[in-house]
Image (cartoon, one colour):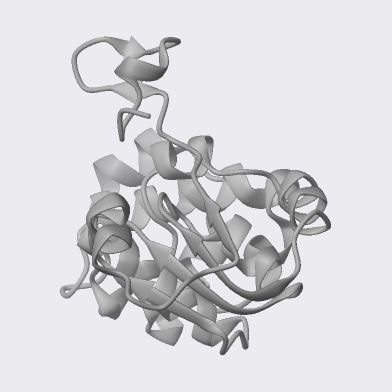
Length: 183
């Protein structure tokens, strides 16, 4: 996570180029020393994918966006809100937290949410975004959710898992055994 992306000038550049052609921006190069044009265009592309799917994230200043694949795999706000209506209680453990949209909505229904994701950069992005979104009852845990769960001493009310249905070599997968983690 390159925190320089959050600089006011860079955020303004990203927002003013949401409708620009990515290829043209790539050829022009970065107008900023501390951030590559690839990082900037990744923010633009990912933010654009959030416009309808994640309007809260799209419309909130200083949100840091992960790569497009993470956005594609995350629940929409509508779906996450529905899922959250099915839970209540003290603690929910999300073993496959991803971009954190489900956790954001679970946190409205459950006192404490634990967001696990093995991708440390994604966990840092999610932790930053929760602060920006004003959510304080989610703990981000940059680790394998299954391993984290096995170390838990304190009981939880809910365990949530939504495995990745993409595989590095197989592309999109359909069998549970091909999902990550293998459920």
